[in-house]
Image (cartoon, rainbow, N blue to C red; front, side, top):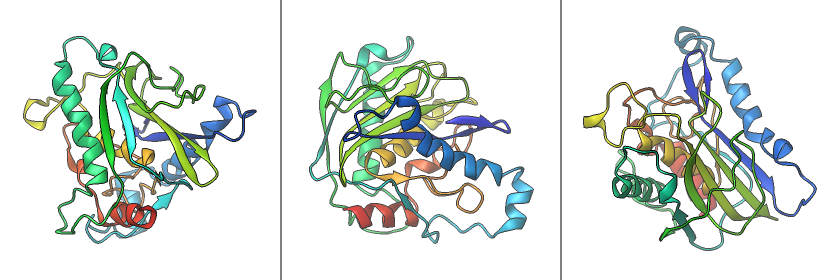
Length: 249
């Protein structure tokens, strides 16, 4: 996520595993450019409102895809040792598991049944780190799907790297910015970013969803910006988020 006009923008990164010559810097451009396109249209909330009507999340059908899907359940692990001090590691772990299940279980407030066949399996803790650099660039593929905390540029909440082989996603990693004082639940939140909506958005990237523009689709989970401190809205999917997943799975 990148800070633009004082708000936080979500950024994902992708790299093609079949292109061994691709550099991490080049690989990270694809989603940065999508986020940049959305940023350029959102000079203010008033400008966004006057440009186009904003649909409620359960009526907004917008989605974009990164161009790949998983052909098997996603088995992932968490580097608990990377958790910033002061956090209950088990509580963080529970938020991460819930965030993955929000995507694969198509969790929503629209009354829509789960029609997504994607699955995930939490395999426990690991000493490996997510293959994402401190600059938010994709690192070398290691055939492991890992979530870990680590420093990222200021204004960036989290970065996801996915790696493809033809039309299949074969690896995904999430790095969460340890510079932030995350809140694990809304009741204990005080002007902080909640971890669950941020990770739910990133898991959307893991399973093949790309960003939708903030100007017209700010209420969808896959919009480019955080909904702001203590908002948990992005933890539940909008119609477009679900339609994108259903198109893939």
